[in-house]
Every structure is written in C-alpha cells, then in structure tokens.
Length: 530
Image 1 (cartoon, rainbow, N blue to C red):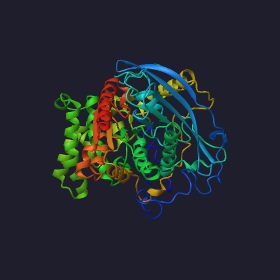
Image 2: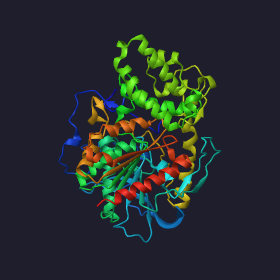
Image 3: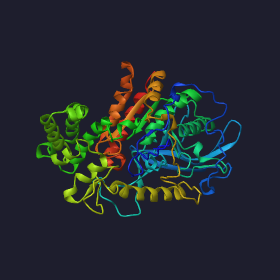
Image 4: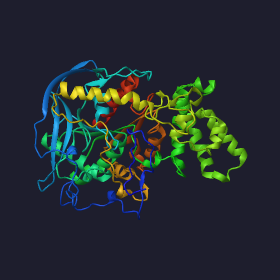
C-alpha cells in the first residue's frame, strides 16, 4: 500500500483497502506535540507548486451569502429562522486566499446568541458533503423514505421535518474543501486540504472564522459528525482546544468511526470480526433467517446474545486459532451459525472469519438477494449468485438519488443559492487522502478525544448507532468508548443509544423520532452543567 491510504469508509461502496498508512517507520503522534504554527492551517510549504485543475477551483472573490427568512413547525411549535447559505473565503495569516468553504447556517430569530447553542455539522467520506445530515436528519425539510426499506419512485419527496433540532440549537452545515460547492482557490494545491490532519486544520479554521465573523464565541458549542465525520469530530476536539483555545460543550457521533481497527476485518485483525458479528445477527433477524426461538425475541436481545458470544467464546476461539481442538471448533461453528444465519459449512470453510462483503452475499444467497452495507434492511440483486462477495450496495442505490435531487432543488429554489457547478454530493477528487501521520498503525483519533475530554471535564459525547449498520457496526463504537482510557469519573460523559435502522438511521422515521428525543435530553443535560 502507498503511504496515502485511500480508505473510502462509509459513503463510497467499494472494497476497503487496509486503513493504515505504511511504508516507513512510525512517526511520533502529532496529537501529543504542541507544534509551532507561523501560519494558519492550510498553508503548507510549496502549497502552490502543483496546480489544481481549474474545474476544481474557485476565483479569489468574496461573495455575499444568500440570506432568506423561513418558518418551521418543530415539536408542535412554530419557529422563525434565518437561513444563510454561501461561501467563506479562507485565508492564512499572511492574507493569502486558500479556499472557499460552502456552508448553510440556520439561526433562530429573536434569540439571544450568547445563550443560544450552535452546532457545527458535517458528514464524512472522506469526500462527502453535508447533504445527508442536512436533508435527512437536522434541516427544516427532509427527504421522505419508506420505513419498511422499500425504494420510492424518483425523483424525490421533500417534506417538513418536525424532528429538526433547530428549536434547541442553531445549525451550521459545513462542506469540506472539494465537496459540495467548496473549492480551493485557483493556483492552490488541493492536497493541502485532503488528508486527516489537513482536513482537521481547514475545518477547524472554518469553525473559528465563522464563530468570529458571526459573533458566536459566547455561545455553547457542539460538533455533530456522521461516519468518517466521527474521526473528524474527535480530531477537532483536540485541534480547537490546542490551536484556538475553543472548548466544546458536546460532540454528537452519528454512526461514527473513531478507530479504523474496529472496522478492518481482514488478516489477523480479529477485533473487527468480533465486532461485526452482532450486526450480522441483527441483519439475519431482520430478514427472518434465524431459528424460530431467536426470531421470537426482540432485536436488542438477539444482539445482546450475539455480543456475549462474540466477546467470549468466539473471541477466545480466534485467539486460539489453529491451536483450538476440533470439538471446541465445532461448538463455535454451530453457535456462530445459529446467530448469523450462515450455514455451519460456510463458516467452517471461512475459517470462522466472515467479512462484511461475504456476509452480504451469503446470507440470502438461496433467495438470490444481497443485503446492503449502509443499511442491511435493503435488499438487491447481483448479476449472478455464485460470487464470494457483493457486487453493489442496495442501500446506496435507494438512498443516493433522492438526496441528490432534493438537495439541488432545495438549495437553488428555497435557499436561492446561485451556482451552476455540480454540487459534489460525494466526490473522489479528495483522493489520494493523506494518512501519513499514521504510518504502520491504524488510523485513530481515540487519544485526541480522550485528552480533550480529560482537559475539559464538561465535554459530553453522545453516540447514535443503528442495529442494521454494516459499515460502522454497533459494537465497534462501544469498543472504542470502552478503550478510550477515560478516568472512572469521566466515563459517564460518553453515552450511546441504539436504533432499529442502519447507518443513516434517520431515514427510518420511528428511529428519527427517537433520535431527536434522545438528543433533546442530551443537549439539556449537557447545558445544565454548572
């Protein structure tokens, strides 16, 4: 693998390469070092040496944002708010323009800004815009989907969102550079924005600059990140504290990853196999592929039984590997088959280790169907039924089109944004993505998050996980939380809740309703701290 690991984590459905950087000796952890910074983020040496294609850049022009007035009914009450949609010109300390970052902000009218919380929201990828959180979970309007995971006819249905958080917090949706309408300035090398550290530096600068320009330093501040956005949020918690001395009140993680080791089910990384198994059980339960005894139980009990097996007998079996006796192996195969819906013969041939793509192909092979990675409730049909892994992700096929159609119409008609270029919902133009600070180890922001929560004992973290998420399985984030190394008195500051949906649990209205209720309680409890 090259030193730039192109790990498209959640929103690009392609086979996942090894999520670590390799190629030379491990460098020191930059999270532990206060490094001098003569320039602001984005200003790398020789940043303009390699020119970026003009189609991927912006001119150095400061434009006025589109400002529109609206009302929405949220939780039974009408809210008057202002929408601000536009680009912020990012400059270094020398005044050199680096990039235009597109954002959409919703601010409640007639609110006291010093008391009003503000939440900075972003998705992941890398290479994703904020469309999914914006039009699926948090914005005043949302895309309609069927709760039973049926595809709906195109183009889309945009409906009011009574589950938005706009009644309790202002919302700022950020499109990192090269996503959405955000672009590097002409003559700037896009590589200075495309990497773990580069991305955190540029997004942190945007948050600083927005907070300064719009007078929000006195406001309680939250981050809300989905998917790779969880890694970004964890990194930002440290960056904002160290660089700008900006302390956060809370972080919300939606189907997030903070440590890539929890997802890299390959080779001898047995941790990931253990963590995926409970989601296999939930998926098999949803598709009625388990025994009548298990099908009669609620999904949370099935997942609990699978976790108990995975963290106990299964984990010990993987640790023993070839040293395990035949009788013990047979017991593991039998129980694993009972919990996952796979045949004992298949599990035995797979040497007890079944990757997500293989599971998605094998579970319903007899029905000639494959299950979705993003949301395993969705089913699809591959070209044939003899391969060892899925050809496509059915959940991507159902979800991408409606989000793209709705966002493009909403921006131009409702928010009156004038930009003829393609709004990059999800782009590969951010690759290669630089993970150079993680050479010879898995990409992880766990230590950064631990330090931020330790330095700021009022920082609370809330994580939402979907039972049917085969991209970031429910057990992965639990494992991450339990391995942060927090002091006992701080462990209560990290809470997790679970939902009967997939990676984007908000496309399932009952889960969206529950998620809003959980977040209202989280914000209230966080802000009630003395």
